Image 1 (tube, helix red, strand yellow):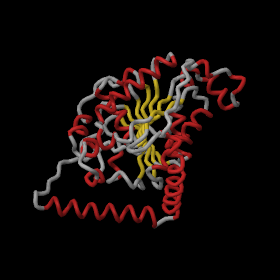
Image 2 (cartoon, rainbow, N blue to C red; image 1 turned 90 degrees about the horizontal axis):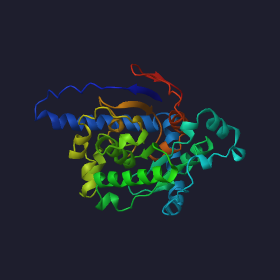
Image 3 (cartoon, rainbow, N blue to C red; image 1 turned 180 degrees about the vertical axis):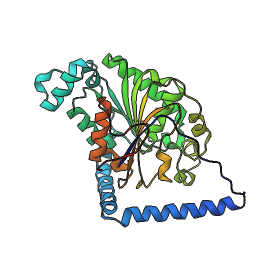
Image 4 (cartoon, rainbow, N blue to C red; image 1 turned 135 degrees about the vertical axis):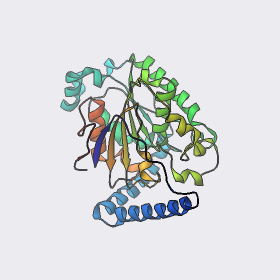
Length: 317
């Protein structure tokens, strides 16, 4: 696993090939990346193990999916009401006592395409066990992927954030978005003024630069917006001066839904980004990977994540 802090990113060099050469080069590049993916997945024991975990968790997730269709009820008692310490474990109590600001900042979980809050069953439990008083997952309509629009979904997310702040008495929230959920949250932060509300945005397997798979989905607004080079993705490349939100972007070289996998990286000169690169973790199992869960809770509690702005650091993962 690589962890990198990024403050700015130089643009890729322009393609110097002629128009006739580009399709051949693109096909060759796609074949090379495909061979690399197969090698990473089946060529090493860690890759096979990662694939097995992804398949197993997909089955578990499908069994939990009906439960996740029921909207989670937010208890409108305020963040501090959840922190009567007599019922907390020592680990929870230590966060509450040592860092009241972090433990009382609500965490909002945003799922991906045709999914629901059940994808966060383990992560939500881990955050609560670490002492975060309010961990709330929302559901978008399953039709969002086919009849919705990312910009409209971002506005709806803004309404959820305002309700969460009003119900808990908090001025700021953390947001964790998986897949499409991360892109919806990023649009809210960058384009709709959400940085005044979102302290930290974590994106897990989010197609920040789109995914080639979107070309094979129905040509409705969301799949079109997820295609590389779409107008929405170009809009997100525009300047975002003085953005106050911190970003943690998690991507994996074994992600089977983000093609190419590096499209899940978040590089923007105006954003404060910490990047986590995984080797052998699938798209769905990012939400349960122990190291990711640990690093997410660490970042949300404002403890530094290994790595810095100028170099890559290799850590176990």
